[in-house]
Amino acid sequence: MGRVKLRVDTEEPVIRHRRADKAHRRDLAGPDPIVRIGIMEEYDRIEFSVDDIFDIIALNGNVVASGIRSDAQWYVAPYETEEARAIYSILTTAFADRDSADELRKRLASEGHPARIAEIGDEVCIDGRVVADNVKYRVLIGRWPTEKEAKSALEPFRDEFAPRVIRQIVRPATGIIDVKDNNFDWSFQIQDGFRIVPRSHNCPVMLYDVREGTGFHWEREVDRQYPGIIEIRIDHRALLMAYTEVPLETYLKGVVPSEMPASYPLEALKAQAIAARSEVLAKMGAKHPNDPFDLCAHVHCQAYSGCTHHDPRSSQAVEETRGQVLILHNMVAEAVYSSTCGGHSEDKVNVWNPPDAPHLKGKWDAPEGQTFSSIASDTYPLDLTSEKHVAQWIASKPKVWCNVEAHPDLPLILTRAMDNFRWEVSFSRRELEDIIKRKSGEDIGQLLDIIPIRRGISGRLMEIEIQGTKKNLRIQRELNIRAALSQRYLKSACFVLDIEYSAESRPVNFILKGAGWGHGVGMCQVGAGVMAAQGKKVEDILKHYYPGTKIDKVY
Ligand SMILES: [Zn+2]
Ligand SMILES: [Zn+2]
Image 1: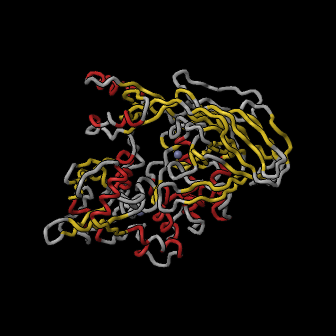
Image 2: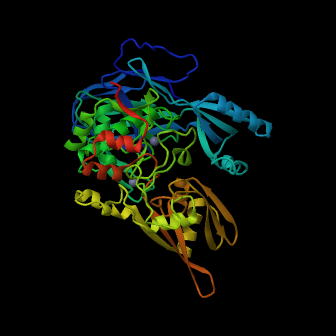
Image 3: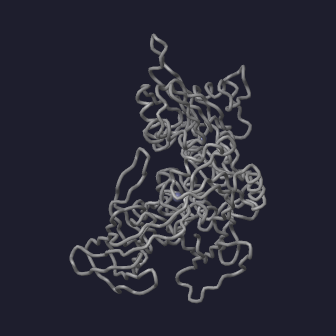
């Protein structure tokens, strides 16, 4: 895992200031650091074309073919392959420091659960300066040969943690890849993988039928153009994966328009560019410890669509903020964001693992000191962790930044965000039972009720109990709850439930009334758009959503 990789054009790689206690380190060279972004995984074939002269280079560095000029479409398929060997373990939680991890490991051991610590993530340096320490210590239990066996051992840990099963690759996949073009001019068999290296730096490589939005309502297959080098390899399941090596600033020109409409006000696009740049450096190595890339091109990390959606306005926002990131305690700060907070953002620690982050504490999405006493005068101040208050909150339309109805003269694109501020979905009992069965793999019998157990500070549910005639299911974490109660995902976990009953007092319909879209931690993108439309500058926006951080240029 996490091999140390140096910039490709460095002739004599020198690892500087290596700290003895850090296993992983990424050295990035200014003025334009290179990042590795995973685009495709688990494809049984990949098709590409290159609108430029290009070379094909094997993973061991051998030149397979040089100076190729081809207007053909190329086909890549696995030929003779062997899957990776993996072990499966239970991840209880992760810490930023080894001592806390060790303490938990010892306690678990004393309770009869032998645990171990696995270190993931990189320390990231730019031109020798440490800008981020993304090393995390995961406390793991058990080693099982299959995911199923590991899952069946989760139960005892559910009360204390939100445990999940993770995979560690112990032997990489291997195999031979067939590469040919449809003019029959070229045909190769290459061991394990190869790199497509175009001679120019525009946007020459086209990948066909790239899956986007897997699992979400906007899932689709699209053709995408990419700048930079593309590497295709055998993946863990002995299928194919593709990732790209691209300058960070070029990558951001593909991220910003994928994450925020390019017609948003410029100051909001600049806030988005700085947040996205900070996220790359603050997450490098920690999100894909088994993979040869830093981040994936999907919602899991940040949506990246190559240069297909490049837009002059988003590119301007990237260029005007070149090298700028959010800094907290001299390091690049995590800068997560989501579409619409619903009026109050969520604590980071409620959505992901500890440690807590002081700049990612949930807060009202409104100017400092604004109150909402008109919503519930008898219950002021509002406490969104209480069932009564959250119901009043969702039923109201408070004047917060992301309530686009409350702000006059907004650009058209922002007024469209209204449907995500407050929303409603309803299911018949049978429909919801089927979804729960399909998503959880459990047959609960007839669905009786869904009980909120715990809410985060934004009103988002962190734990629920689904009650059925055969069994009850506990579900933890906002994303799991959103997945469990929808064909794909609910817009957010901030919702209250109304049940309609039949004359015999059986539940017939389940109506979910909710607020917001996304996890709600950090910047509210719609709120940022409204702030910018009301004349706020990028500094004001970032100060509001990431209090305590400052903007600094790291290259
Ligand atoms: Zn990812
Ligand atoms: Zn908001």
